[in-house]
Length: 297
Ligand code: PHE
Ligand code: CO
Image 1 (cartoon, rainbow, N blue to C red):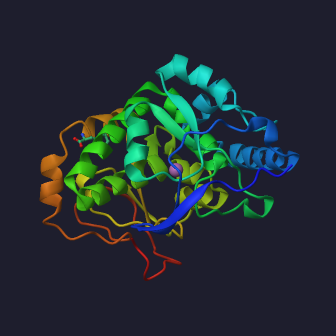
Image 2: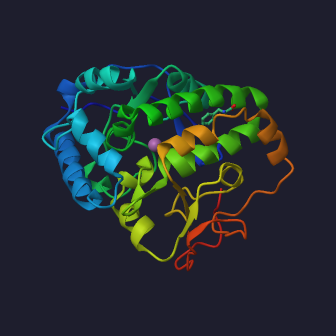
């Protein structure tokens, strides 16, 4: 049975290029309508990533993903995951068609609701998809919502987003960079080495290997204002990854009111995605091999 296409409303020019923006509606997950191909795509990606992520993803990510009961057998039901999540941290998943307008997205997070795209990619899209689908959202984002500190960080981010939206577009650019370099592409330092916690990495086979094993990218210690000034890549692997010491560090660093920070950042130029500064704590200075010379956003 064909599920049809998601309910896309328009393409919008954002700092990420032209992206489809979908209806803001919350929808029930059409679980009984997933095809055997949909379940197979989930299964293939799930097994492939779990294998790659042993020794690469953070211990906490692997542990929380197991604790939620996600398995390769079939696409998880949001209702089942919600029972675990509500108990652990009070978060809940809501189904959506895809990318939401910024303010709608922030409002969900501020109320401890995580929007999850209901549809999954096609078999020919296993390695790359330009927009988030169910695999990215569920496999990548949802496990760490079981962790109380990370769960609080996500809600605080949503509240901060509502506020930044009221301040203006530059503030939103600063805040979006923070999301990108932590929630989507963050690394964490464990006693036994660097590990991945960013959702954009854990849901990608290529980048899961590249971000830790390649000499090309920079790996630099977390620094809030530095990150908020740093451009990023939307169509290639990142040139730079930022490393946190702990989820508590994220929470503590983002506790202060950002209003004066936004004002001060407005006086500074953006930093290109691949630049290393004298003030950086450098885990790896990237060789820059294979880097595109344009296209930082
Ligand atoms: N403290 C930030 C502010 O005042 C909000 C925030 C929290 C932003 C956590 C990002 C992450 O805007
Ligand atoms: Co994402």
